[in-house]
Image (cartoon, rainbow, N blue to C red; front, side, top):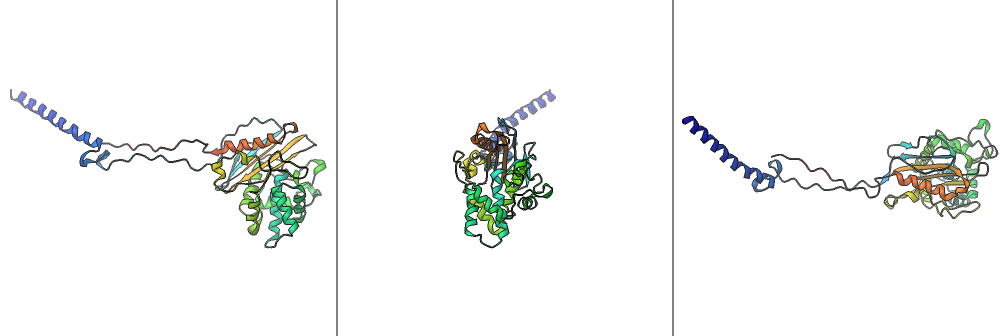
Length: 326
């Protein structure tokens, strides 16, 4: 009988001990008493959701319903220098008026600390703000440009300096027979265009005295896609229309577009360039003239919209609740 009595006493002791432990464990889980919360320490606070980072442009898949001869785009992360974009971002198209930003920069850099003549300063302003052809041609000649084809198919001095100073690898003189030597027919790739934007932004293009002046002018580009004249036209459209207010409110967006419906191939040649202190984006295309300029403007805007990161309406980031133990 003694072994049975001893076993019965042991079983009763285990049951009583278990009953006493359950309230203590519950108290820990509930945070009651001096035991604290999980793990016996202080209570773990509820995680605080954090908002997504401010939106910017970053590499992402781009899909547009484009119908034409050529379409490409490139994006530079100006903090890292990384260039991403379409598979054909090294292929070229004519710059048209997009190149006016470089023409003005090249002229101003050569001035150094000197002031331009009043008429040339006005011409430079008109070339950027209103994409004025006559103003751009005056500045181009003052910078040392020539409309004569160069020996051996080499670029003229103005374009050659863009290639050297900005590290362009795909840019070359145009080869359309009746337009050889014309600066607007300069062939440039989207990846070279974003390098050009970066070159203007960091001061290599216009030099220390004139960079701020040029960047300011490039924020004052005026006129809608429907405001076009024979020798000038509105150029405030394209990439900037695809940017949300949350990006435009972060700082100035500098821009210069190029666009011409050319007779020799019947196509619109559209080149869009915009950049900030964080990124540089270019979209270039050629498509049938019957589609109109607004078609190209919408293509540029569509690319910009698809590269916005994070996309509008992105969810708050909620940290995972820490896992504790008794």
